[in-house]
Length: 186
Image (cartoon, rainbow, N blue to C red; front, side, top):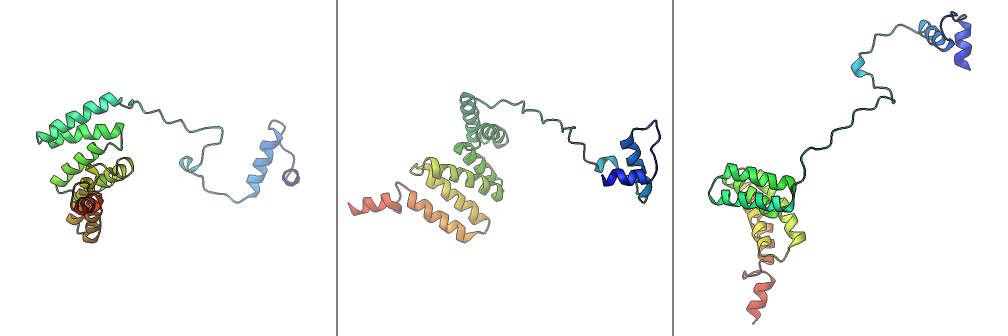
């Protein structure tokens, strides 16, 4: 009502223009002149929705394909073709981000290239997966010890020592840990 009263106080609208347009024009005439606003800074009206992002076109690899990629990466790793092995292991991780062997091998490649930060990140992921999926596996302490190596190379001595202690505790065949204690008791 206040809007309508303000508009009528300014005078009647021209007959050819609808009342609501005239009211807006009258209000604009009464307000101070403002600089035009660039179109890029104006949000689109709610009726104009942003286009939906297209669905990813790459299909998730099958378990068989992941196994093939991992085996190929392992072959290349053993042949010391690290660049090609890295490509294969990255493809494995794209399909299965928690693939411990791919994470571990990529970390080894990074360690050999003295990229200890990247190696530590990969080993953190591998260790997290191993700790939850297979804490009693023989590879879990090895992954943790290798993470300790990366931390040591980064100058994180305390963290490295803690990781080494954890690895010894989990080691099923080492003289440390619960398996070693049981063997010494007999």
